[in-house]
Amino acid sequence: MLDGQPFHLSKAAGLAALDGRVMPNSGSAAQPASRQRLKLWQLPDTMHCSVIGTCMTTGELRQAMARVLQADVSHISDHDLHARAVGLCGAQTAASKVLSKALDQRHQAAIRQFSRLETELAVMEKWNEARRAGDIPGAYWAVLTHPHVGFEGSRQAFGDVHMLSHLVGAANRADIRRLTALEEENAALRSKVERQQARLQELVISRDAMIRHLTELAASQVKAAAASDEGETLSALRHLVSGLHERLSQELGRHRHLERRAADAAEASRRWEQRARNAEARCAALDREIALLEHQEKTHDPAITAPDLPAERILYVGGRPGCIEQIRELMVAAGGELLRHDGGLHDQPSLLPGLISQADRVAFPVDCVSHDAALTVKRVCRQLGKVWLPLRSSGLASFLTAMAEPAGAQRSCLEQ
Image (cartoon, rainbow, N blue to C red; front, side, top):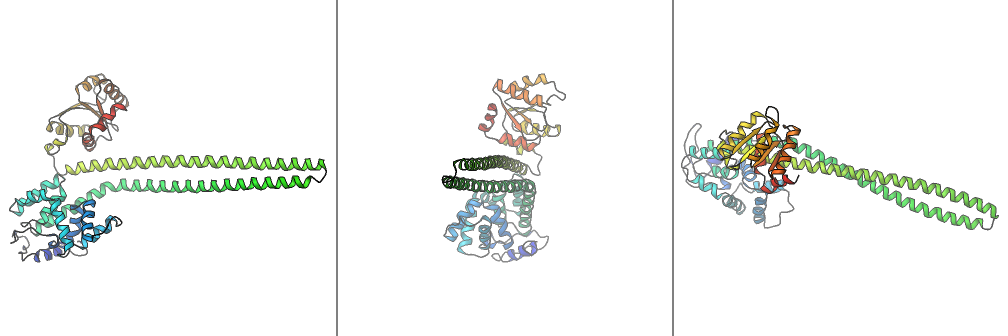
């Protein structure tokens, strides 16, 4: 159900109103009579949200809406701009024409590929290939507007995109919650430091005012005592000076204590900021691994991801046997070779230098390798000028992500 109405009812109403096209009966394979691609406003209203959200990036949507509204849209939030764009898609207007044209221009290549297909079955096979390869936006727009795709085909593509959004959201939810908690803690620490610094400033001002007051009081006492007996004057003056020194010592002690507390709070804030930056970096790494896993979704053919891997000889030290064979198949399919050393569990540690000398690069998962093996890899790689890649985990996604890193980032390992 979408927007409070069943999907099949809203889709049926949309198809029935399109250029007099024939509405396919339940279970029928009938094709639309028109040979024209659909426009954005001809799609059912329930599909506009997924089209705008999936087929246009935030930057592309902002450019298109700036032309539609003929105004600066930088002050409008991403969500509000998305909602306004979806609201403009329901009727044939100048605004919907601009959005439809922007989608056609953005996905020209996908539209050309799909336009060569003459049957709904062929279109949906092409859609499944694009979905498995992670090429969703252009293929989705080409399928929904294809003249040979009827109710069932559009419903299948819409459902695939809908479920994919659930998978991506579930994978990122835990890291987003942790990052949000760290940001909240960091904000609380910043606020605490600012309050303590303000309090310290107030105390310093109060101390200076007290010192001035006591100095003035002492001066007045000296003047008043000048007319009295010299002995009494000196005794009173000594007593006054002693009291002033005592109070000044107390104020200086409080000042030093507050300065230490402020320094401790600033150091705690710095540590939390570093933890927040580390969490953001980890979240970005997980996003890259999720993208690679989506690229491989529902396929076991190593040739699909092989072009992303280098045709090199890679030495993998440590790891879990379950993932090693998958990595080996991908490397072989890419024209490379995978050498393996289990990190000393069964293989002799003395074999490592020889294997490293044969490899172009060396990778090891930091969560599944012995400490001695990792130190040996780093030492020998420095001596031989080899690049080593410490992997976040022993999973396949971490290996693919490391292989996709720019060469400059990998060369930096030699300097660690």
